[in-house]
Structures are given as C-alpha cells and as structure tokens.
Image (tube, rainbow, N blue to C red; front, side, top):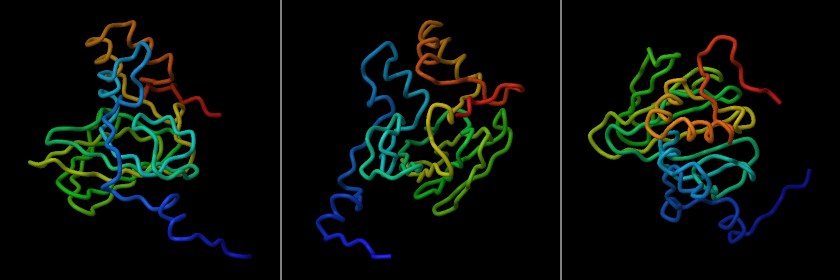
Length: 198
C-alpha cells in the first residue's frame, strides 16, 4: 500500500494541535440560542478544550481542532471543587488521565466507590458504569478525557436521576422537559431503563 504524504504546512493545518491556540469552551457556550440557557448546560458538562472529535460531534465543548471518527479527546479545566455530575456512557469507554492536580473519580449508581488520580494516573471507565469526576486539589487542574469505542452521541450519554431533579428544582419543570427534548436522559442506574441503541 502506498503511504500518504503531507507537507509540514498540511500537518500543521489538519493534524497538529497547539495547546496555546486552543479555544477554551465553557460548557454551554456552544449553544446560546433556544430555551435551554448556558447555565443549564454548565450543570451537565465541564469547561474544556476540545482537541479531537468526529466531524458531527454534538458535545457541549464546541468544535474540535482535529476531526477524527468515533473518538473524542478533550482537556477539562476545573478549579478546586469543580466537577461534573454523575453520568454514564452507554456505548463508549471514557478514559481519564490526570495531567495536573489531584482528581477524585467516583463510580457506581450513587457514586459509592472512588479513587484518587494524581498526575499521569489513568482510569478507563467501562461502558454503562455511572461515573463523575472532581478536582480535589488546591489549584486549577487539567484532566485529559478520552471517549472511544463507539459513537459518542445523545444515545450514549445518560445522567443520574438526581441531575434531572437538580435542573428541575433550580430552573423549573419546563426547562427539564426542554433538556430531555433535545436528547438528554436522566435514567442512569434505573433498572429496566436502557439507552436507545441504533
């Protein structure tokens, strides 16, 4: 098979990601229109730098610098105490690597199990396991997040029922209904509830 050839300029444009040039996307900044406010999206996703993602990724972080099939690569940036709510990926594996700081990763339907990750420690969470992460250090920290092994879409991402309740309590029932209408689910850990598999 003949190999492909790229010039340095082509590689720089299509394949190389310079961290200093990445645009920081607070969760919800991608979607400013419609009935769901950025504050609601902030309850569902960590602020991050999108590095790689599929061409038509519907993640909340904005457009990734490099387009790749079936693979999402972001760097979450969070202050001390910052984290994401309990959720699962029904079809994909989510792998976390602490780049800086100290991170608590919890798993189980109620987050009943936990481990601490320090720089370069890595935790690959299997599909259909509820999980969350939180910066438990004393400074802003960075966590590499890789989502692989299938298509990461709205059928893959499912939040714990408590997250839906928190949205309804803070923003009202209508807002929760709008969030569910765009595809978010709050059934992680509920027996008999499965993600719609295409």
